[in-house]
Image (cartoon, rainbow, N blue to C red):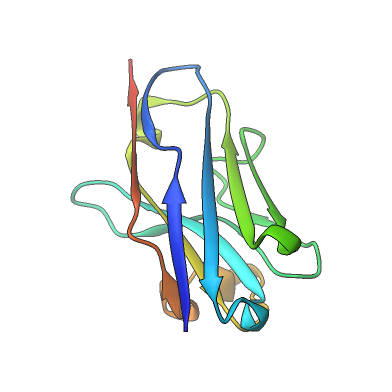
Length: 126
């Protein structure tokens, strides 16, 4: 089993930045892909960014050039650096992990991920 704990959410003005962290514990050796999802009220959960162990990354079109996913396997931690935030980025952000390497369309499916964090709220004011 893997446990994921997110931190770093909060309230920020449009144009500002936030950095989310996700720390894994438990059977961390089994993790391959780590990703960030978000879910706004009344909307489906959507992929923000994903990174399998091989260094590849996958971003939603809406965040390309603004958000960056990174990870340090030695620290069992992944980050999501969010710059130039917009009100439409407001959502609960979830960390996800899975033992398989996911790319492209597969990486975008919530069902591809076995482990989930509890979520952290990000609110961007206009």
